[in-house]
Amino acid sequence: MTPQPPENRDKRSADASRPADGAGGSDATGSGRWSDLDRPPLNEHSLRRGLLRPGSLWSAIDIVTATGSTNTDLAKRAAEGTAAEGAVLVAEEQSAGRGRLDRRWSAPPRSGLFFSVYLTPRVPMARWGWLPLLTGVATAAALSREAGIDTVLKWPNDLLVTVGGTERKAGGILAERAGEGVVIGIGLNVTLRDDELPVPTAGSLTLAGARSTDRDILLRAVLRSLEHWYAEWQEAQGDPTESSLLDAYAAGCATLGRSVRAELPGDTEILGEAVAIDGDGRLVLATADGVQRPIAAGDIVHLRAAGTGEAG
Image (cartoon, rainbow, N blue to C red; front, top):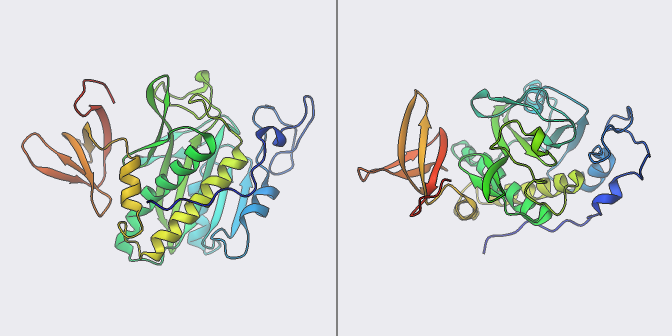
């Protein structure tokens, strides 16, 4: 059985974090009143109290009202030697959030979770490529448990939820080398409404029918799940099989078993069925000519579920 992250020990009602109608509140930096009572600011004091405990992976939690990119900011700190392992940087709003291939995106203030963590793995560097997949497993597990919705993974780094019977992207993960380690950014749409979606194929936890959209609870759950999986992976010296990471990723990966188009660097593409995740975290495609091709990087387009005519 795949090891599961520990249950949250400090759950609270989503309503408990919100003021009574008409009441004011401060944001993470103590400035101003809430502009949207459905989107209260994160409680920095509560998050620090719950996560910065003796023996925890997490060493610092900072919340800023707005920034261009938490990955950029935290990577700069890491390069300057001012970020220790376990540093977490959260933004209530990002104006220049980055995804793979330097794609840009933004979202309304306090409508999601936009944060980065700094890790310095003590495993062979050849296995560091598993970190974004590990983060995907940890995040999906936490969201499925706390939000009560199925959250699946699209290789290599997208988080998908189901809205109206259709899979939509609700989040993404970006890992970058920085300093002596890796900065991992996570962006997750929590309360975005239909009229706020950047593209029709996007989704959010609210649109997927989440039972909880309390961002404090969700952030704690994701960080605790990430701490759990990171510890298991390091204990196994980064071995994805011994740590159960490979099995967990494959079990939650919506790409496997599907016909896909892999759009590769250099404007080339490969069509095939996604049949496996290999020991290096690569997606293995079985092509029409009988060849199995491992894909290390690229955009994957789900064409249809294997054995059906349905779009994926």
